[in-house]
Image (tube, rainbow, N blue to C red):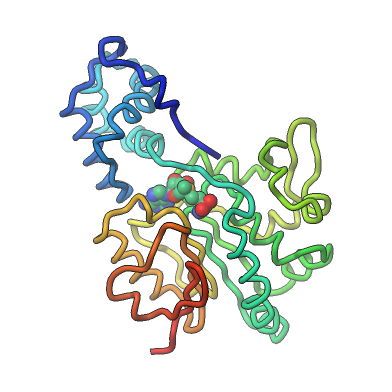
Length: 290
Ligand SMILES: C[S@@+](CC[C@H](N)C(=O)[O-])C[C@H]1O[C@@H](n2cnc3c(N)ncnc32)[C@H](O)[C@@H]1O
């Protein structure tokens, strides 16, 4: 889902409903960095006003200064403020070469692992409203209507996590407007999506294969197991170099040897962890044995 503002129609400061100063912007910038690792450039000053003024109004505050003071005491509202400033743009089968690589180069060995009683875990980290993990299961199932049931009987699971509760609510519903679902290739959409008025709903068996969880990538990761595949695409683009360096190290630790990491088209591996990986294609990396 896209959260964006029409930059051509940005409200000029003199017409703003609430007082909003450079100091307020800097306060928000620090808050978002500390809580989500996201770096807001000063070009986002108007975007911050546009997105947070709705929260200022909803909380019955008269100014940004009062609202920001209130955030110090109210953790839930702080989460709402931070998530209101995340960019949740996503789509089904975005960067489709990743799904082709997964299906053709990685999945055959993972399927054998399942057949011989092994465990397979995939993580969509920063899954937004769910299009990415649903694309993953649809790509793996292809046109095989029996595969979801087969996967449910084997030790297969997808973890899909995001910081923002509002996008996870959409993901859990598995319901997408027709205009969004139409980017799913017709051969898969006809099998795995059920039309319902203006929207389409993901097949329940596919939904059962995915566990959606709220998780801040900057916090502690409760998962004990390692993963065979991690997708973390178009998330780290908003982080600064030290945050990316730490995250790549953590992803490396969380991947099994021989496991795959897929990152977004404008992202690149940074820091010491880049030595842990071998490039296997455009923004596709395999963890080497150490
Ligand atoms: C642009 S979307 C990318 C969605 C999907 N991976 C894709 O490529 O289409 C980035 C997502 O990362 C999430 N995000 C940003 N910072 C995060 C953090 N610190 N922890 C977890 N998720 C975060 C946002 O909430 C947003 O949904």
